[in-house]
Image 1 (cartoon, rainbow, N blue to C red):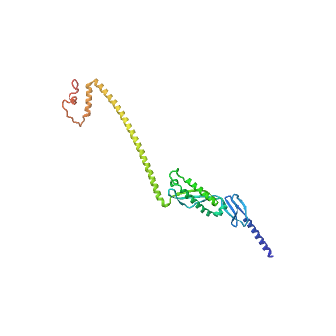
Image 2 (cartoon, rainbow, N blue to C red):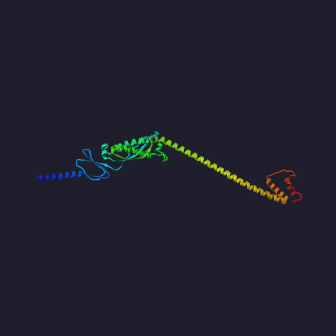
Length: 300
């Protein structure tokens, strides 16, 4: 009677084991992943572009890999430019697994792959930055900057090495920041400050030169205007004097004695005031009007 429970338990265990075997024999590969089926650690087949449900034997293993682009940020490194200037470069490396079987054979995992990428990108950066001068990478004017061109060369060189040896597709290398080493920053900033001061002095000198030209032009125009105004004033004054002389001449022709009286009174007005003292002889022409009136034949 005890054999029946034992047989039932054995049958249940067999069913459960079969279910586990069947469960482990099927697997799903998402579109964002690639998979390699292995037998005793050796790759048997690769599922790369066939997402969905797949079958493998229970004794076979399964390795999964991310197919999407991954970002690796290596630690900032110091490089030397063509003109012997030290620069610290901080970059991002965009990459993905292109050949899973080759990737497994050469690097094995993501951590090792990023170590390899670090060496590849560092070598490419050192080679390309060493071909250009500091002014080609850092400038206050966009025209001479070759940073984009340099990074394209870095990505091309690193892409060839990564794809040929490790089954990795290097998508791009992007520059995040360029800076100077801490020990060089003070001297670099001092040179930059001196350069800016030199440029400012040059601009001030150019401004002073322009101001002097403007003042010279203004003074010249002022002199021309004054000369023109003086000439016009003299012409007007000459015409006035001529008109005055004509009027005086007409007055003298009509009544010489009255004209002489008016002119004498004008002379008195000009030379005599309450503070003037004059000593003249009794026969002075200047005093005849005061002592004799209008002269012979004239009224007092």
